Each structure stands twice: as structure tokens, then as C-alpha cells.
Length: 372
Ligand code: GTP
Ligand code: MG
Image (cartoon, rainbow, N blue to C red; front, side, top):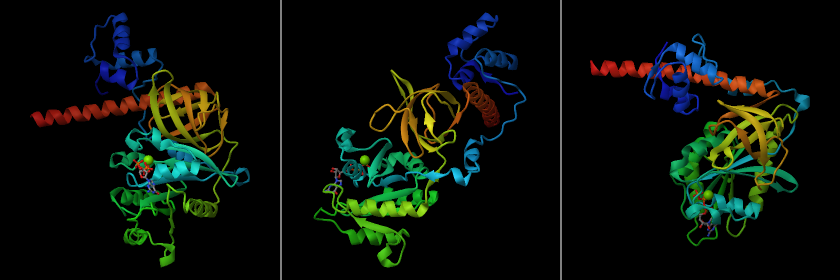
């Protein structure tokens, strides 16, 4: 088996190295953070901290996402669910302003320098129907967030400022939407501005293969002013029509599963995650697993920071109660019992430890080869 240091193992187990050093000391082994551990010591430490660490574990690819895709849905249990709509586009083209206008809020004022730096998840009622919106950052640094936004969505609204035209992150948004196979609606924004040139936007989008309906293509372009509200209602009606064509459904009675939209460590509350429920209903007290993180949901709040006891399909909720900060984009799953959730998370951790041990040994061999 491959060598691993106390520090590496501690990191993988999300423990402080001093805990492991202390434990080894009690066994009569003096060690430091850089001490290479014997296989037996690794096993003892894993056992002590509740992680199973057999040497013969077969490393297989994590198949949780496939599990999710391969669920055979019983048609009779499916019920309509709200569409998830992701707003994308180049920086400053007006995404957050559009959402503020739709929600009649003013999020943009709270943003640092008016630049969105995280994914906002909101649920809005339109003509008595719920719609979930994800607001993504347009700044070039946040490609991963945009890709994630495109992957969990049913529709992408690409906002293009008519006074600026198609820009690098507009192109990127088109690529993400195409890669995810989601329909695009184009919002040609800022038409209230003197320098607005909507025709130019249509030309430039057509060059990217996004052909306007009025030119015989299949993409709807809606001219709007996110600021004055002009055209926004038409945009929303269009968006609802596109959603209706998809006949979006989910089984609300299943054990909940979905995707982590965002996650962070909060000083007072511990790991906090925004989850998008995609199947089933999530309840306070449910046992969930995300990657190697697990826990019982202690508290859930909706996008208005109100506490809720359950979250149905397409609903975004912020939760606390996880053992560690999960990775954004990972799938979460609910289990009927806590022990099962804990076991699954620790098996994953075990696999991860073995994988990294193999990777680190491969690296050291390479280093060695370089030195020779
Ligand atoms: P990032 O999240 O940083 O990518 O930006 P964003 O796309 O969310 O743009 P945001 O909504 O923050 O708007 C950028 C600027 O454009 C703000 O000053 C808005 O007031 C302005 N703006 C947005 N929409 C319109 C519009 O329709 N007309 C005019 N005149 N200004 C607009
Ligand atoms: Mg924004």
C-alpha cells in the first residue's frame, strides 16, 4: 500500500493533525505532521475516528450522479414542478437588475461594487405559477458558477446589453447552454439607452448560431429595459411558454435529492449550503449525504430567509446541519436513516483517502524519475 503522512491523513479526514499525533502518542508512537504512517497505524487511526480504512477497498468511480439519472420514475407519481431559469450574460449587462425588476427587490444595491459574486437563487410567483431563478455572475472569473447554473436549469435567459453587444461572457453563456442542451431565450437589454442597437445584438447572436425566430430560427429575442421594466412581462410570458413545452415534472413524494448551488463555512452556524431540490421533498430532520459531507438538516430557510419545514421540487433552500462544507455542484441525497447516511459518507471518505494515497505515490515516483 502507499505511504501517507499524518498531515495528509488529517486533511483527508477533516481532522486536526494534533488529534492524530495525540492518538498515536497514546499508542506509544512519536510522530509529527510529516511522519509517514504504517498501514497498521492508518487503520488504527481510521478506526478511532470512525472511518473504515481497509486495504482491499476497490476504488470505483463515485456513481451517485448516475444513480440519480438512472432512477426509474413511476409516471403516475410525477407532478408538474416549477421551471428553473438561469440568467446569464456578460458582466454589467443587467442580469441582477432584471431579477430585481421581476422580484420587485433591490439586491444590486447590496452587492459589492454592483458586481455579482455568487449564485443567487430565488423563487417568484408569476401569474400564480412559481418559477425558480438563478442569478449568475457575469465577471470572467466565475466560469465554474456559470457552468453549474447551466447544468441544473431548464431554461437559460441570456441577457445582452444592446449598447454593448455580444461580449466574451455572452459567448461563454451560449456555450454553457448548448453544452447543457437547454433552450435559450435572449433578453436584449438596455433598449432605453441612447446608444442601444438591438439589431446588432441579433446579428452577433446569429453569428454564434443563435438564430432569431423572425429570421427563421428558433430562438426568441425579447427587447427589454430591465431598468424601466419595458418588455419584461413579455419576456416572462415567453419564458413560461418555453417552460410549458418541456412539461417539467418530478415526484414530490420520493426521498429528496438535488444539487448544491453554493456552500460556505459560516462562523456561527458552521457549514451552510444552498440546495436546489430536484426530486422528492426535503424536510427538516432529514439525513442527507453530499460527497463526503453528511448530517441531519437542523434548519432550512427559503430565499426570503424565512424558516421552512419542507422544500418541494425546484425549490432552493439554505440548510445547516452538515458535517463539513460540501462542494458546489455536487449531488445531495436523502436517506431514511442517519446511520446509513453516515456510513455512505465515511465509505466515500475512505475511497478518497485511498485514491489520494495512490495519487501521491504516483507523484513521488515521478519526482524520483526527474531527479535521476
Ligand atoms: P454582474 O452580475 O456583475 O455580471 O452584472 P449584472 O449583469 O448583474 O448587471 P447589473 O444588473 O448589476 O447592472 C449593471 C448596470 O447596468 C447597473 O448600473 C444597472 O443600473 C444598469 N442597467 C441594467 N439594466 C439596465 C437597463 O435596462 N437600462 C439602463 N439604462 N441601465 C441598466
Ligand atoms: Mg449581477
